[in-house]
Length: 572
Image (cartoon, rainbow, N blue to C red; front, side, top):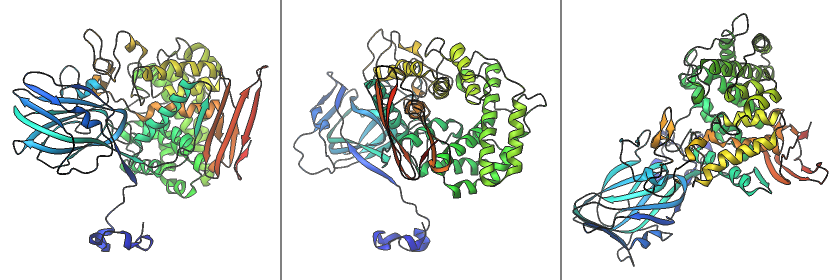
């Protein structure tokens, strides 16, 4: 924002000078104070005690003061005294302590954040693989009386507080979570006769919302990074829920600026292809011509570069690091099949963008690349590869759905590529089967205490394992601390990962049936498929207003539809 657009009377006096103010930036996020909902555990022994813990559940604590009516006192007399608090829902932000008194003058407290109860009770390292990667979720602070330290930020639901000094006491007037988030209107919606699906839609939307900080992150605990190759399910959900947010364009430009060609985004060749795919879908949704124009040279050069990675017989030859999804990493054939589909899909969408920009020669190059890739159609039994080949039009969606994707239900699904598996099944018309997999797979996370969706999940983890919102009983497997894979083993595993939000975007596109097909949603297709649902209603945001739909399945199986389109949006 330039100086002429700023009301200096609203700027604190000390930074009004242009040489200072021009190097500042406002934080568009808000802070909301939250109280814990319950005490899940506390120390109770001869050498350590916690009394008055109900004081920590009070709401609206904003200021420490001299004469608190009641406090919680943690006393260590030879061993540490601790307490575990549950805020009832995962969020991103800080925890603020209102310290009334300490004995002696300074006391060391250990603060541990956890996305699960077991993570908040863990030690760094060890057999559970708890980490401080990307953020210090386990740290020691030194506090004095009448103080209000803020600790964080992190992504968490649970907080454990321990007095570390062997002979010390701390009286705490209150504990508050400070939720930091972008204040956005939920313009999109989904409601049906199935409450589980409704909850899954809302949880998916919330999961993405938490990851929309200054940029769009993978995870609020880990990875607090712009992984552009992981972001497409998130941006698809953002389009269905919020329509537009600047965090997406900031993330796309960050990835571009960090990786001048021939550097690949995130060091992974396919991630630069996903950047093209996101650009295309974002432009159809929001129609931001100025933003697209700003990508012209980079987009054109990127498409020319990737057009050179196709052999004469149509085989993709993408360079290292070759990545589709974590479960395909050990299977070179599945990786190749997936990359063949991603490259074709990116070239198809790149052609559309180039024609929009008047770059007809590059568009023709993209069309030729798609034609060449079609000479080689990999066969696969891998669900990730089958999904992307179907969406790229390289394999028949019906065949892939029947022979690969539906086999074993949610077995072989991942939270990232699960979005594309659902969409490929939706393209085949298998919406009932897709909804059943959503219930089985994403619903299972909710059944174990999740309030956000995870970096990964495997149905095999359910047998004999715990809930994430309870302490793990003796003889029961720790669902968070004993599972995970690849780079997200055990407690390092993120329980709030934006790429897991696919069901919300899928339900908007294939159940409500709404897809933009011209820039800025000026033209949309509306082809509902209720699957096994009796009725559905929802909304979809466009730059011109909200699309409203309501569908009811009649006794003969036909659908009665009510559709309201804002002015300037045409159904085709």
